[in-house]
Image (cartoon, rainbow over all chains, first blue to last red; front, top):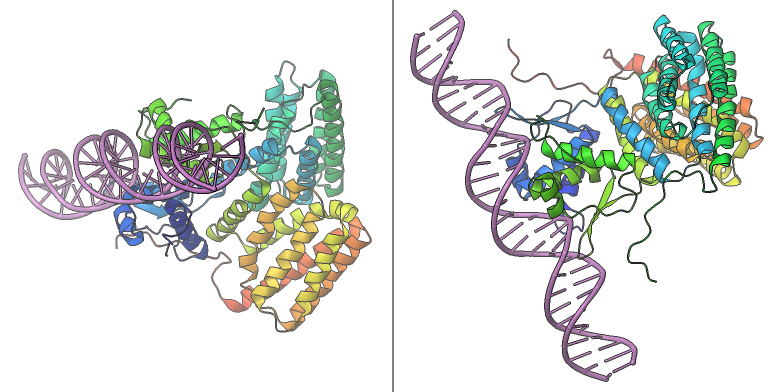
Length: 257
Length: 257
DNA sequence: CAAACATTAAATGTAAGACATATGAAAATT
DNA sequence: AATTTTCATATGTCTTACATTTAATGTTTG
């Protein structure tokens, strides 16, 4: 593990990259303890704050964890799906909101991915997943639910469907796609009629999953996608003239007049 | 934006979280300049190194970028798909290698996701995507190719297929699933016969995409999945008795006994 | 007047040293 | 033998200082 002091890049970034590469390559294995900050500082010939900045970078990616005390230090962290979820969701959310990704594009991706889970979910769904789906459908039918709560329940319903596929890799990937849609969905005001239609479609999905009908599950998802797209279309059309992107960049400062 | 000095969590982690929340919530918008490190230190009532550690955490997630000089500072970064790709791939790779995810599970997820792209890719594929797929197939048929190069070409082929769907959100999600498989695939030694079979299946996929046949594309992907699974099965069976997980954790240090 | 050059100020990048605090292990005590 | 104390070690934080980059400003010069 070496760094180039002449490089224009920050030393802490270089050190972080070197350690990250070692972890990815397997040179550093899970639960292995890194040298102490003082030792790393000496190895890389930098000061301790610089080493610490590098370690904080790695900690931000959950690649290491630190422990204080006598036997403490920085340890290679076993990256768990649970830890990776929130990062994945944050990243996906920001990608959508910062890049003027249209509602249509995001929606298309989400349902395409969800349909990918349909055959597996239909084949493997447990009673637990089905119960969660039914419970969320019931919640969605309650009157007086706020739009935010309705959307949150929608996310929970779809996560149950995805988790029903029993594949942690799929669940991880889909978490980003499904949850990142929530801020977009929250922009929509749902009429009672909209909700009733969505509840019906959710019921179709749950029914299809229950009788383990892969094709029907997929078709029901497609129907829901069309409904969602149409709903969004009408809402956005009624609302304003601005694009479908969510957030605009700050105008360039010091612009010439 | 406030932090809790009494919290057991690191101050730099709290500060990073506060700023991250502000970015996700939209309080801080793209290209907006954060206060200088000295100002942030005063605001949060901490020292400058602590602020810097927080900023490095955010930089590691590409949420901010920093610029030196007179008009420099930390700016909210527009998270691009290009920036997000490598992070997604690194995370996915580590998730697979550190969590004893079986080859079968990873493979299932990958092909399920890829099949999700099939209808879109068949409908929208450009001549460019098709050309890339054909070129990679041609490369794969070359004798004398190393296993690594063969796998790399395989990844390129599948990325072209995914990109053919013309949905950046899908491309982003799939990048992780497809590329993270490469280290797993690299463990396999391909015989000439294996390669010929894979090239044939790739050709089937390209042909189906070319004539925009969604169902045939999906079927060809399924056939390739079965082939891959069978191939891996035989390789792993022949190889060893250890599980299909790739990397084991370091034994607990200072263990009794 | 305009262009080239030097100056300056503001900001990040890095270093060094010190102290605070947590924590496990060894030593001392009961 | 069990408990308590001590202690060494490591991270967490603060302070101060200096180096470096960079754009804006001021100055000189053709």
